Image 1 (cartoon, helix red, strand yellow):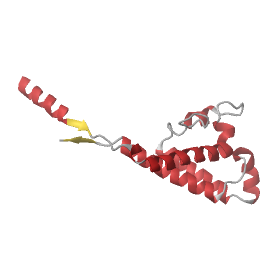
Image 2: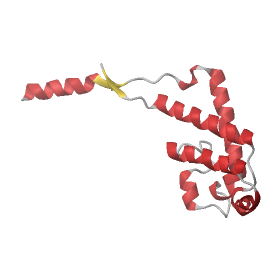
Image 3: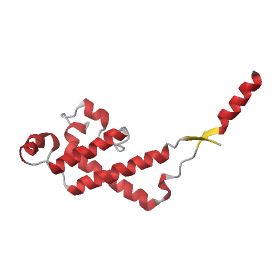
Image 4: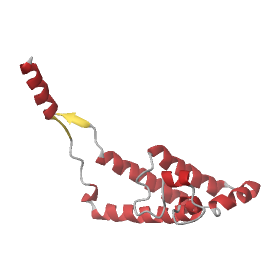
Length: 141
């Protein structure tokens, strides 16, 4: 029985988390990511800041729980589904017209451009890729 326990401890110690490759291994890629991070922050501040800026009286607790745009790492708490939803919301701002635009204008501070949408899509894809690299599956040797 004691021998079986020792074998289990040995096997458990042999199962370790693989070391992820350094996300900053490519300085140029890191610069592109940081530029996108800041660019998307500005897009979200323009269109979502009314509810997602903690320092505004219009801030909504539920919105701040998802992301707070005036935090340096504002996207850190966002899940994959929340990030994908952000793409959808910006896409809606690109496609809005007429009465729908007038109704949503108050909440989202104007129409987003196609460049804004492309920037958000690229940022979300890159952020999710980085998260996958940082949290690899456990592997046994």
